[in-house]
Amino acid sequence: EIVLTQSPGTLSLSPGDRATLSCRASQSVKINFLAWYQQKPGQAPRALIYGSYSRATGVPDRFSGSGSGTEFTLTINRLEPEDFAVYYCQQYGGSVTFGGGTKVEI
Amino acid sequence: QLQLQESGPGLMKPSETLSLTCSVSGDSISSSTYYWGWIRQSPGKGLEWIATIYYNGKTYYNPSLESRLTISGDKSKNQISLELTSVTAADTAMYYCARHLGYCDGAGCYIWFDPWGQGTLVTVSS
Image (cartoon, rainbow over all chains, first blue to last red; front, side, top):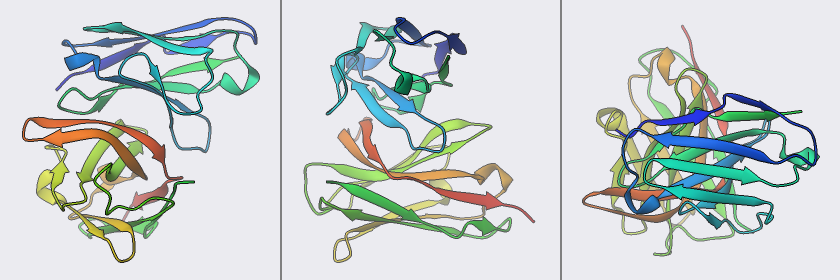
C-alpha cells in the first residue's frame, strides 16, 4: 500500500498569501495519478486537482498542482477567505489511498 | 446538476450489518462513462476508499474490508447500495457516496472522486 504523508500538518497564513502544501508518497505513484481535495467543516471533500496538475471542473486557477514520482505539491496563489480549509491528497495508481491532510488556517 | 444523497441507520450495535443507500440524480448509474461507490472518513483512520461498482455490475473492493462488503446497484431506482457485515466501533465513520472518475481493471482501480454526497454518519456503539 502506498502511504501518503502530507506536510505541514497546519499552515498559518493570511488572505492574499501563497500556500504551498506537500504530499510525499512512500513509493512512486503510477502515471502521476495524484488528486487533491478541499474539505471545509461540516462538508464533504471537493475535488480540486487530478492527474497531478489538471484542475477539476469549476476550480479557480489560483489552485495549481505539480510534481511527479513521490513528491507532489498543491499551490494556492493569493489565498481567499474561502480557501481556509483542510486539504487532502489521494493517489490512485492501481490502489487508492489518502494522505492525512493539511489544515490551512488564518 | 449531479446530486448524491446518502441514507443510513445512524446508530448501530456491534456485530450488526450496515446497509447504506445512495440516491443519484442528474446522471445515470447505467451509463458506461463513470463508476460509482463509497468512501468513509473517521477520526482514527482518515479517508478510506471502500468499494466501487461499474454499470455492468463489476465490483471492486478495498482489500482490507472485502470479506465484509457487498456493493450493488439498482438501475430502476438509480441507487447504489453498500452492505458491511459484522460492524465494530472501528467502522464508526462518515460514509460518503461519490462518482468515480477513471477506471478499474484486473490490476486495480485508477479512480478519483467527484462529486461527493454530503455523507451519512454511522456510529457503532453498544
